[in-house]
Amino acid sequence: MEKSNEVFAVSERLVIRQFGIHDVQPFYQYRSNPEASRFQSWENYTLEDAEAFVSKQMATSPNQPGTWFQYAIALGTSDRLIGDCAIHTIGAEPRIVELGFTLAPEYQGKGYMHEALCALLDYVFGSLNKHKMIAFTDVRNTKSIQLLERLGMRLEGHLLENYMIKGHWVDEYQYAVLQSKWLKKRQ
Image (tube, rainbow, N blue to C red; front, side, top):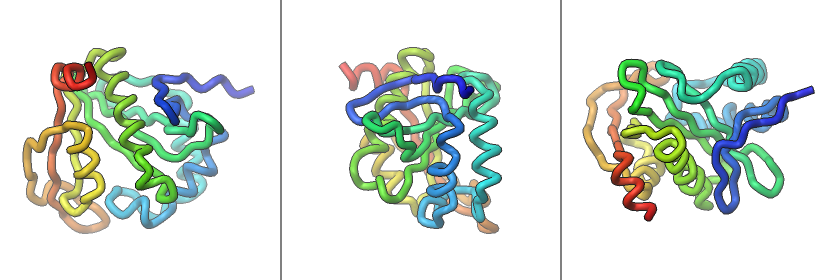
């Protein structure tokens, strides 16, 4: 019997929770979609990749220095997986976390990721008491840039040829938000 998926945050329409075995198929469907992976490091994502990823996430816990933890983003009404978001707890400074996120293309443009990341930031800065969240995005990824700015994250740098993706070096922007700024904004 599968253990229950721990819930980390809830928003108006979404639940941010731990992955479960029932998430493998929808996770595979959007991770294997070229539109979803355009600015991501993976390509040719297989069902076996999805199975291994979900199994690993089911066995891990958030907030472990030096590791990434992926949170499932599910619809509150149906528990259907529509995307994921992640935090990387920096090993050298675990009070700083890095953000990552992916949303199934059919759910984009409806405010889901903004809602999910607001709930995640509330959790990260409230429950986990982190000092700062950073995010890197490909400079060509205008949707992610707009989302990070809508969250109130500040552009902190333009990093030239900072990331190798699919055989090419790309520039990245680094964004960040401090716990104090986020909590003040949310009052």
